Image (tube, rainbow, N blue to C red; front, side, top):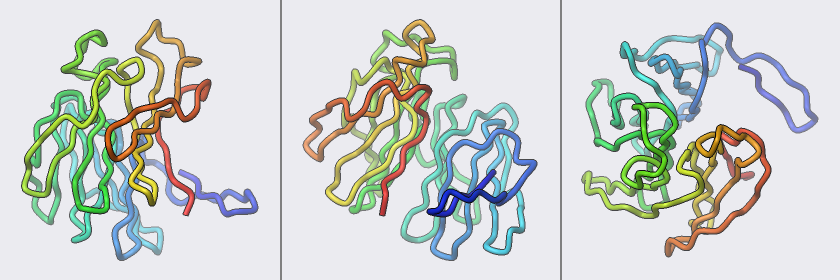
Length: 207
């Protein structure tokens, strides 16, 4: 997995991580990397790599870290969001959970995808194309639904509370040219921010 500085120079941060998906930093500079094969890896500032935990049969997607350095991982196969505080627990059940992001109030937002895990139906609004909001106490509500082609992936908030969502675009005939980035305002108004971004899977906001 490479890192890239502003001048475009790339250098490896770690290798042998399988298939890295979501990334998240804690306040100590540790980088958490979700492997789609069901492992959460930790890369320390000195480059040391360790496996935090692994789950057989899992399909890990997004990673998010809260203000207390608890780490959250989405498992699309099981349809759950795990929370790791030093001890692993299930924080919430969200069918086809994939992308994760916290807003400024500490609410966790979860995107859902319908492509394969579990074998979903992209026409079923209860599986893909949803953004679920989970309060710190665990209360769930649907923040947005019927988004894109249903194959939603990574999430990121900007400083104004707008939520950006990557839509992989594979659900509709497996056509990566349909991929897009959606923008959802704090009031839930969704629009296409960018289109034709082939195989859009994760998004980030420039500081």
